Image (cartoon, rainbow, N blue to C red):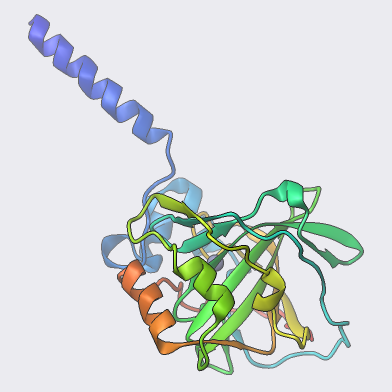
Length: 246
Ligand SMILES: [Zn+2]
């Protein structure tokens, strides 16, 4: 009897901490994007939301937006393989930021999806980078940069050369990375309202998709997809009448 109680106590001990963590999700099998909303009550927005990302950028409205205003300096120190993507983490104290609607949005991290998540006139780019920013109120603005296959990116190599091959591993960069070189020189962009493209798919995210792509080499793309083991893009979501401005 005592043995039985001990076992039950052990079971309770091992199950309880698990409940405190976010539910597992992925890009394939029973935890793939079409199942995200069923994996946790906290992921319901993935199914019920009306402003979900990514989207196909097609018809746009010309609002004469000024080119985006970047203030990037210090850059990241660390690159993380979190099992869903490769992420470069930026110390928010360094205040790499963008100015949007007169407000400062500070860069938190940037990461990659292959193929691209947003599509342009129905076409995927080979890869898409997401630079995730937050303002003082905690609102999120994501700058997206598309990459086509072409010339190798020396700046990406600073991340790729230390990219951890195993999930939940991180590594320090060996040479400093200039984030400005990961932004196209032409800073015109499309803007729309959307969501996080991963669970919990929270809405109210301002999306700023740079119109001009950069390039990476076929072997750089191969290294990323090999490390991720599979595509890591969420399929495009219905726009429900949302307008893309430029
Ligand atoms: Zn992303």
